[in-house]
Amino acid sequence: MLSAYNQNEVLLSMMDSLVGDHVDLEPMRKAFESTRGDFAAKFTAAVQARFAQLVVPEVFIDVPEHPQELCKAELEALVRPAADLLHSNPTKRELLTTLDRIQWRQELRPAWVPRLDRHGKPRSEPGADSFDPEAPPERPLVVGALAELGDVTVLLPASDPERPELVMMPGGIGEWEVALCAILGVTGKRGPATTVPIDAEANEALIPEGRRWWAVEPAKSLRAAQDPGVASELLATSTTLGGLPVTDTTPQDHERLAIALGAAGDWRHSVRWVLDGWDPGVDAHILATARAAVAGWAGEGRSGLIVYVYGGALHGTEGLIAEPGPLHSYLLCVSRCADGTDVVDVVDRVILACPGEDWCHRDGCPVADFPEAAELLAAIVTTGDVAGVADQDGGRAGESYQRLYGAGGTDHDPDSVLDYLEMELLGAGWVELERSTWEGGLEESLLRRGDHCLIAFYDPITRQLRLADGKSQLDGMLDILADDGVLTGEDEYVTVDTSEQVVARWGTDILTAAEDHLRGRIQDLSQLSVPVQGTLLGLHPHADGALNAPESTALAKEQLTVLARVASLLGDK
Image (cartoon, rainbow, N blue to C red; front, top):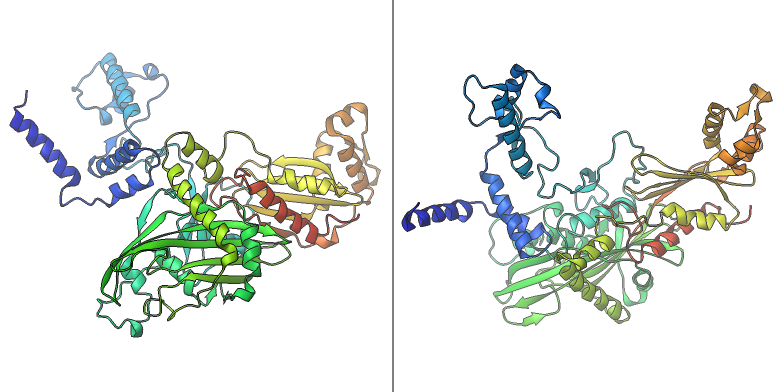
C-alpha cells in the first residue's frame, strides 16, 4: 500500500505527463472540439488523444477460429511474439491458455492504440486512426475550381475503385459547392457547436503592405485552406472567383440575390470562427466572432449557391457591435447557366459590413442597404444558433440534427432522386423499362417514349444527374434476353418469345422494346447525342446524396425538372 506522499507523487507525475508545460495540447483541443455529445464525451476524447501520444505500439496477432487444431509448434510460433511471459518449453495447454488471454486483451484494446504485426512492423486496423471506429471511410479529392483561393482538399465518401462514377465538371458549380463548404468549415468532423480560432496575423497579412501604416512584424500569411478567416476574406474582396468577374451589386441590382434568398433550400452552418485581435486606429482590443451559412437555391428556372457570412464583435472602446470587426459580412450568390448544367454563369456579391479602409483588403467596400432581406437573414442567424446547440447535444436533438443536416444518413430509405425524375417523365409519356443500382450506389433508369429511349444516371456520391440517349442500352438488354433464352433464331430471323411465362418474368414493355429494337424502329434521341449532366445542389456535399433534409426534395425536383426540360424530354413526343 502506498503512503499518502507516494500516492500523491504518482498522481502529480501523471498530471505532468498529461498537461505539463512540455506537452503539445493541440491534439487534445482538436479532439475535444470535434467530438459531439456532452462534456463527458468531449473530455474523454481529449484524454484519449493525449494517451494516444503516450502509449507504445503492441503486437497484435490474428487468432484462428479453431486454434486447438494447430500443432504445438504452430501454436508457439503464433503466440510467442505477443506473449508477455512464456517459458522456454510450454505445453500445448499453456499455449492455448496464453492465446485466450491475448485474444481477450486485444478485444479490449481501443482502436487508437498503435499495433505491430508479429514481425514488428506497423499494421493498420479498421478505425485505428480514428476515435470513431464506426465512422465511414473518406476519400480525399483535390479541387482547384477557385484558383483565387488555391487548391482545396475535400473528403467524399469512399467508394469501390471498380465502381463507375460520374465525375464533377472541372471548375463547375458542383466543385464550387464542395470547395466552399470545406474551406469555410461547413462540412467535416467539426459542426456548428465547435469554436475555431482564426489567425489574426494571417488576416492582417492580406492588407497590402503599403496601407499597413502601423508597425508590424513580417507578415504571416496562410493559405485559404489553412484558415477559414483568410478564405472568407478572399471571398469577400477578390475581384474574380473561379476566373469570373465578381459583381458587387447595388440596391438596383439585388434582384438575383432576392430570388436566391427566397428560393434557398436547407441552410448548413459552419463552425464558429473567433478572431482575437486589435484595432490599430484607436489601439484597442477587439474580439470578433463569425460563421458562414451555405445553401443551394432553385427557382424561376435558375439555380445556384448562396453563402452568407455574418457575426459580431466586442470592441475595446465601442463595446458590442453587430458586425464581425476586422472581418466582412456579405452575401455571395453563384448562379449556374440557365440550361441546368454545371457551367457557372454569374457571381454576385453584396457587402453588408466592411471593416473600413484602414483594414479592408481592397481599401474599403461599397456597403449595400438590403432591407428587403433583413427578415430572411435574421432567420438564418437564429437557426445557426439552434444548429450550434443541437450539434453538441448527445441525445435526440443531436441525432435529429445529424439525420437531417449531417453526413450520417438516415435509418430509413428516402425517396431517391431518380424516383422524382421518373415522376416528371412519366407525366410526359415516358415509360420505365428497367431500374437498377450498381454496387456502390450508382443508380440508373432506362425509359421509353414512342420511338426513343432515355437512360438516366444518378451518382449519390458526386450528386451528378446525367441524361443520355438510351438506344445503346437496348443492345445490352438484348444480350441478357438472349442469355435467358427469350430470343430465338439467328441474325435477321431472331424473334422475341412472348409466351405467358416470359411476359410474367420480363414484362410487356421490355419485350416490346426488344422487338422494336430488333426491327430498327428505335430512333436516336438526337437532342441527347451529347449527354447533359448537372450537380444537384443543396444536398450535403460529403454525404450519401439522399434527400434527407426538409427542403431537399423540392430543391432537387426544381433542378432536375430544368435539366429535363432543357433536354426537351417533358414536351410533346
